[in-house]
Image 1 (cartoon, rainbow, N blue to C red):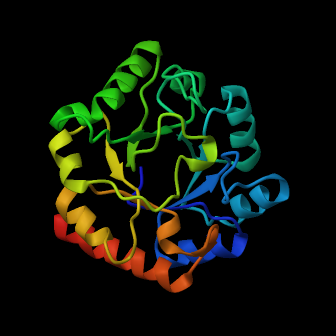
Image 2 (image 1 turned 135 degrees about the vertical axis):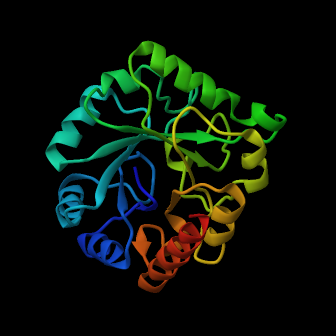
Image 3 (image 1 turned 135 degrees about the horizontal axis):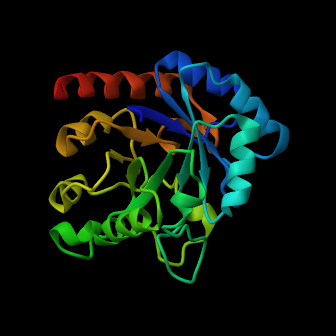
Length: 236
């Protein structure tokens, strides 16, 4: 769905800057508790500023499908990213049936690499979630592997923390049933290495290109996109 995604954009000016830098996807964060959360007019401003041809992705965690669909229609979102927990009774959860409930909208699913489990088992929960989603009516179009968080993490602590994914462990975990992207602590200085080690053709960052939470840094964004594009070209 994308190659270079810059997430947590909070102003129209930053949205235009990110697009001009060469990213092909911009994430609009609607997660309660996140310092990058968009509400009201700010959300409309960012969505309207994203140029044609750049993917607009709304990021949600534990939000009911009806509310997601309403916001997607109002803001002309191209896809939805589900960033809540895969299951459990604590914190925001996005269950497998959510994909089917969002019929007509491509779903990107954020998952966690469980490095406490060996090899392929590190993505076992993600595989099971995808299987259940398919059985319930629809699979996600893509998966983003993000850094691990506590099973009890609140919505605001689910992403954008700067914590790294263990790329070697991700390779050992193997592939999933859908295209994959890597996120978690990516910066202009390490994104090329992440691509080289994982072999994945899609990357996602938020805090790694900021001057402060929610404020993107022009030079960091340009450097990140350039490093990612160069590394991606070498995969080909």
